[in-house]
Image 1 (cartoon, rainbow, N blue to C red):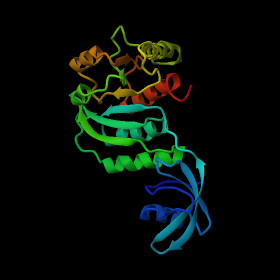
Image 2 (tube, helix red, strand yellow):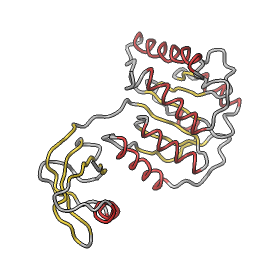
Image 3 (tube, helix red, strand yellow):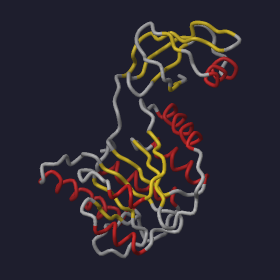
Image 4 (cartoon, one colour):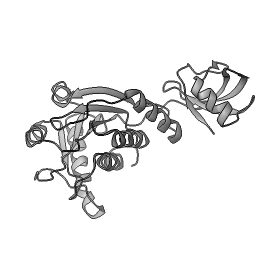
Length: 261
C-alpha cells in the first residue's frame, strides 16, 4: 500500500490535504479514486490508514480512519558525514534512512572540497526512503558545521564511532570481511559495557563519523583519537568510498548495538 509522509496531525476522521506533488502522484500516476486506501505518517502520531475522500482538478482530500502502528523511533544514532560530491552524498542519505540513522549531520573537514549542497533535495530523498522502508519518522538533515566546532560542543554521553580509514591505530578495531569483523564488534561491545559500568546507558546515544573523499588529515585523526567519547574503528584493509563506508559502518553498529540484534 502507498505510504505518504505528511505534516498534518493524524487522528480518526481528520482531513488531510496532500501536497500538490503527492496529490498528482496519487491521482494521475497511481490512479487512486474515491474510497481507495493509503497509509499516512507524520513522525509524531504513528501510522494511519486513510481513504481518498474527494478528488478535484486541483488535488484530493484524504480522510484518516484508523491507526495501523503506534509511533516508534529507531535507535538514537546520528550519522555524521563529511561533505562529498552530490551522487555519493545522495546515496549516503538514502541508505542512512534505510539503515535506521535517526539524524544525518553534515560536516566540513580540512580536506572537504564541496561547498554547495541542496538540503531541499536531500530532504526529499530522506522522505522518499522513509516512505518506502516503513519508517514512522524522517531523519532530520542538519546544516553543515565545521568538524571542530561540532565536537567542541559535543555531549559527552554520546559515544562517537570514528571510522579511521588509515587503520594504523593499535587501539582501533577491525571491521573488514567476515573473518575480521568480530574484533570490531567486540570493541563496540566493550565501549557499551564501559558505559554500563559508569551508570550510563549501554544502548544510549551514539554517532558514526565518516570522513571526506581525501580522508582525515593526520592532525584530525590524532585529535579525534584523543577524545574520551571516541571509539576508533577500522572498516578493513581496503580504502572505501565515503558512501560504502557509511553503509558498512551503519550495518556494523546496527548488528552489534542497534535494532538488528
